[in-house]
Amino acid sequence: MAVIRGRQKKSGGEIFTASMADIVFLLIVFFVLTYNTEVDRTQVDLPETWVRKNIPKKAAVISISSPDQGEVVRVSTGEEMSLPVSTNEEVITFASTVVAQDPAKEFIIKADADVHYQKVDAVLDALKQSKVKVIFLLSDQKTVDG
Amino acid sequence: MGVINIKKREIESEIFTGSMADISFLLIIYFMVTSVFSATRGLDFALPEDNNETPEIKQEDSIDVFVQPGGDLQLDGNPMAKEQIADKLLPYIMETLRENPKKPVILRTDPDATYGNMIYVFDILRTPIEDGGIKIETISIPTQREISNIWTMLGVAQ
Image (cartoon, rainbow over all chains, first blue to last red; front, side, top):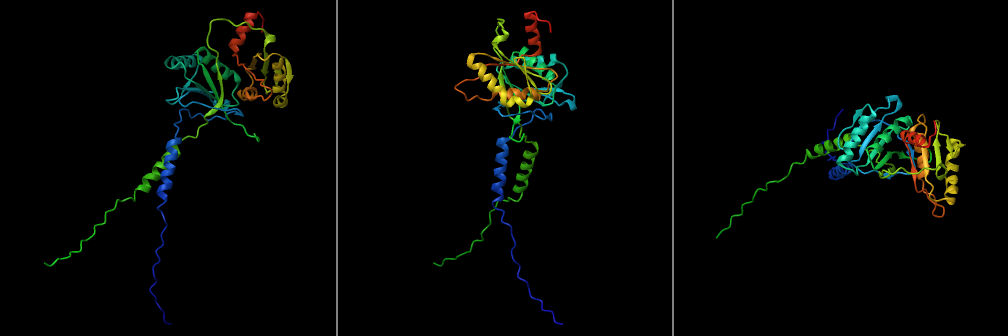
């Protein structure tokens, strides 16, 4: 049987990649603009609220982990990674030092919704004693379902 | 005079961009991994400026909201179930403020209640009231130490 071998014409299969650079740079610009360094990596289930106000960047953070994780209190100036503290006096010392450097410094309380209020009360009391002026209670957006 | 036309060989000038995609994707991956879409909103409250004067406290001059373990309330001493709070708390406060718009709301929370219970009530108190300009002017969140001090000042044993 005769086999006819025809020379196949190579079709130039090419994916158009010229716009890829645009998309990639757009993504990079987006990430650069929205980039936030995380100063506290405590995983918390935040309480949900309807009323939410913008929290200033670089505010000092005091986080309280969930009861499952031992309700550990961690503090951060907002510029450095958070460190655990064990006593209320340490919170007062930390907050007093921060307020001494910047009397208008805002503080964020980032606490798990299931934390016993006693723990939050102790932190609030420490901040009041340290003459903190504005406190933000970090929350998630409440939804109709929630 | 004869002109000799020499065909110049064109040198292709090209910047090699083959590695640009690699670098770009590397940057994207870096930002995706390290970037945090952190929650940056919440409820705020300002603490009173420190003055050395001790305020005169009269119980009848304020609206007392006491959050109990489980989320139920005691509103001026009267019990209110958690399910009723969303519908009944603000109307009660509005009614009281109509008589005396300056009345502060004191939000107390039992130490055994959860933070979520307290925030639930605080969020409702912070909700803007659309009723003839009536609004809660002051919400006070005293700490256990402050409450103890007040009871001691009033000579009430806890």
